[in-house]
Amino acid sequence: MDKILIEGGRPLKGTVRISGAKNAALPAIAACLLAPGTHVLRNIPSLRDVDTIKKIMSQLGVQFRGEDGTIEIDAGEVRGYSAPYELVKTMRASILLLGPMIARCGRARISLPGGCAIGERPVNLHLKALAAMGADLYLEHGYVNARAARLKGTTIFFDIPTVTGTENILMAATTATGTTILKNAAKEPEVEDLALLLKSMGARIEGEGTDTITIDGVDQLKPASHTVIPDRIEAGTFAIAAAMTGGEVKIEGCRPEHLTAVIEKVEAAGARITNEPQSLFVKGPSAIESLDIKTMPFPGFPTDLQAQFMACMSIARGWSMIRETIFENRFIHVSELKRMGADIDINGNQALVKGRESLQGAPVMATDLRASACLVLAGLVAKGITEVHRIYHLDRGYEALEKKFASLGASIWREKG
Image 1 (cartoon, rainbow, N blue to C red):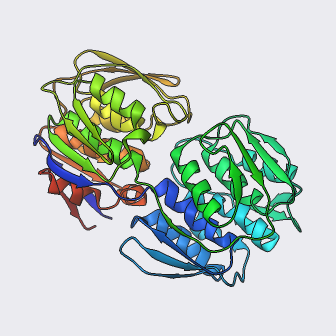
Image 2 (cartoon, rainbow, N blue to C red):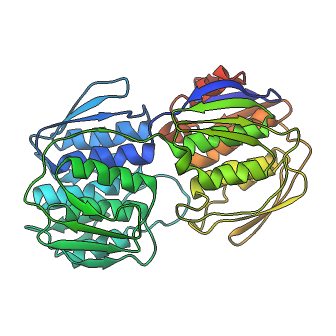
Image 3 (cartoon, one colour):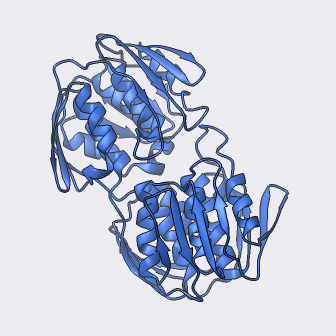
């Protein structure tokens, strides 16, 4: 099994370009099921999760062509309606196929999803919404089975803002009869990006980016071309890394307006950040200052950067409090940071971090996607060699991360297992 090794202590310097957003690419690919014909998607990152959703859809009869960030998706003929456990178990976002498959085929059979072990993340909100739209749903042998001749528009209130739930029902509602109103909808940029794609396919959508989205169903959609937004989580990861290492890094191809909360916290930690329309320049401080964070739905501080920021606070001056409000089991990286000398105490959904002057390199094991990035960042500033194992998690969501860090001067490399 592959591992990444890092010899810490080198400040990052140079320019890095951000890849397309994983969390926008996956729903965009799923959305292509809605309209027969050939779609073109650009800025698609080369990731394990992207490969997984392509494999699932290929089994349904969808054809994929192209590479280097641009793919053609021929959804002219959909022959199946089942997404098997063998593929779905590796990626929770597979549930995004449920809505478009019901809308296109009138039925779907999808294994309950797997992926990162960061909490329950139940799909009940998706199922409740689809049932309200007239779908006949039942669970059998670990699979969600759904049927609906045609979904019906209705008003849906999400108990909590859910990104994949909002995206799933947004796709399903595009060809439902009547009007669907999503209340307490997720406001993340990835939801807006999906709505933009669906509109180019002929969907009638208003309110994306707010907590109330209105969809007037249409009879059919048409193929479209679309460029996926940059990955704000990757951009934030590099911004935090630049600050931690005392480096000077230009982050190109990002959207600073998607990173407002992150920029505020990285600057509060002592970094200086210069914004341009599609880039950031981050100059790290001589010492990291401690501060508190609380993860929140967008536009708050993203849960997907909590682990990376904890690595940063592990070398800050003073005490920090990190509160995780999105997922109930997203501190499982703490035990690995402690192996590197971090001083962290957990109390429920709160982590109290006492900054240390330095961390020590050690063998560590990644437990989920963002924990992988957290351990890489810790390795960049640790004394000695850090070995990050189980990096298949990292490959799910970061495109060539070790190569990008190496291009900035980090001593980092991958060893094949």
